Every structure is written in C-alpha cells, then in structure tokens.
Amino acid sequence: MEYLQTLLAGENYAFIAMVCTAALIIWFLPAILALFFNRKHFKLILLACIPAGLSFIAWGGVFLWAVTGKVVDKYADKPNQA
Image 1 (cartoon, rainbow, N blue to C red):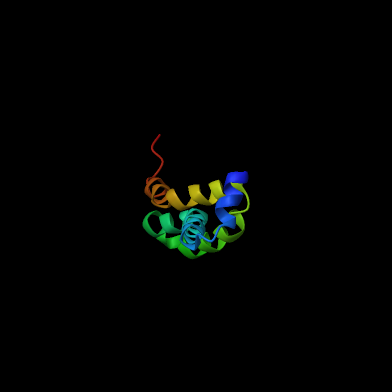
Image 2: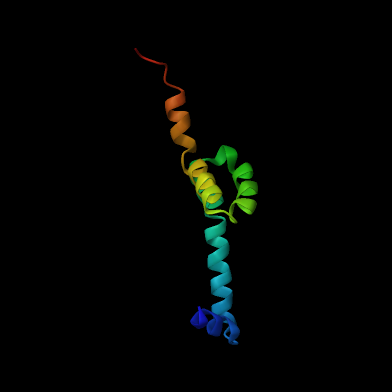
C-alpha cells in the first residue's frame, strides 16, 4: 500500500491521469459493451453504471445486463416447442 501511496504522491501527472482514465473505463465498461450487445438499453445501463461502480456485485449485474441483450431477444422470439 505504501508503494501505491508513493506513486500517487509524486508529481508524475501522466501516471495519475492514466490511472484515472483506466478507472473510468473499468467503471463504465458495461456501458461501453452495451453499445455493441444491448443498444436498446444503453441509456439505462449508462445510468446504472454510476452507482453500480461502488459495489462489485451491482457492477457485475449491470455487466451481465449489458452483454446479454441480444441473447435474450434471440431466445425470446422462439415459440415454445414441446
């Protein structure tokens, strides 16, 4: 932990900017993936990413919601065959 504190306490602004950028990309990764897999719910997923980033379980749920969009539509259109 001290190593991380010394890295962030230094005046290496490029490193700090890269860490902040990486954190934002990971925080909003479900929204980025929703652009490809679940475009219909992109706005809702984007809004859900904001508080979900504080909880790994909630973030995982939003992540699953983002990547399973087309899969649900694919199987929901098929009639039940018995």
